[in-house]
Length: 107
Image (cartoon, rainbow, N blue to C red; front, side, top):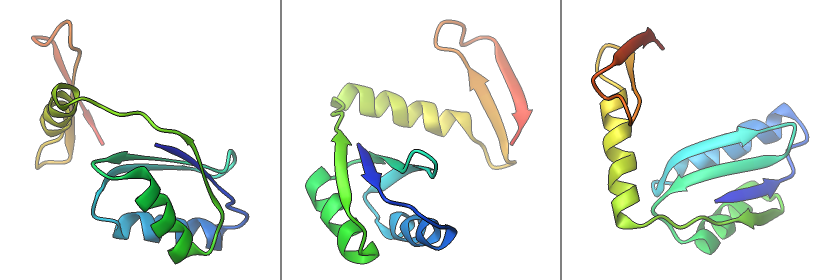
């Protein structure tokens, strides 16, 4: 889901980030301060999350785009996410077409 939230200063940025970290349904979040956009992902009801962010931050929240994923895509994304990180803070980057070619890089 893509939302527009007015993020004027670093204090507003920290407040929005803190609220996003406190929402258990959100698995992924991205704050774009200059574009005043917030992108979140996970299993949630979009309107409920927007209302919760509005109440906790006291900022106007506008939903710009909602993308729904099927169960197959969700499972595939979660498997990719789990396979990309390991316990040593190394990220394994594998392309879908060439899964036998694995590169490692330090996070």
